[in-house]
Length: 276
Image (cartoon, rainbow, N blue to C red; front, side, top):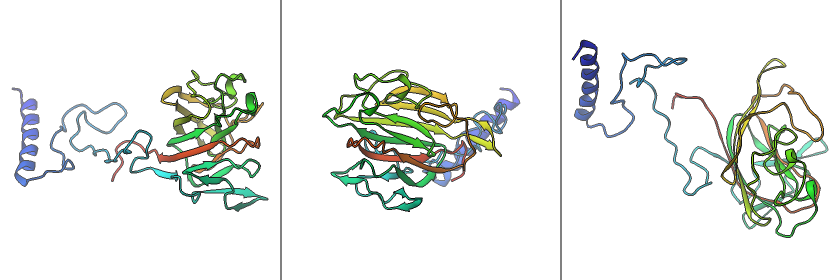
């Protein structure tokens, strides 16, 4: 055994022995790792670095789609305390309906904005179109999920319904159609799981654009897709400078179709090796 291997083995055994003698039962103290391995490219850590922080422990949801322990729940079926609406330039109490654990778009009252502001995030939402189909194309249960009040993932009844590709359910509206259409029948619940990476600015200049990864009913429909700018009907818009964190909103498209939402939550995303 050469000297470096011997010292590495000695260090590994010594740390493990100290932990065993002290009776440590928690995973927090480091008991395995090295300090003489190569530095990882672009990082400050050695390969298998004994000093590298452990990831935070987060209890997952009890069932698929349920919020994990570190999620901020925007709607749990009880009330709209995390939301507001705009009326004549002023914030007002929400006028959307809550019943049977669901929120319902109250057509004509305006879109619903989150009190919480966030940028980079993991986002989950479930939505339902009416079983009795009304309207056609873009008039068939139109709503949307707007990140930072600017970047939309379309909500629509696109089940065997014709409309322009970059405007159907799961589209990054007006920019990218979903890779596939995995929508369930009207009346059944749909889900989005979205990783949103907000744009980064230096002054008014965009240094990093926004990206989205979207799972629609568990099916990947956008894979780290770059956004051209803000999303809107019929135009191509550039990015405009905004804050690092902003409200998101759920769209009232004004068609009067009772679209339902439930189980809405997000997690703010942080980098690797974050302290407790």
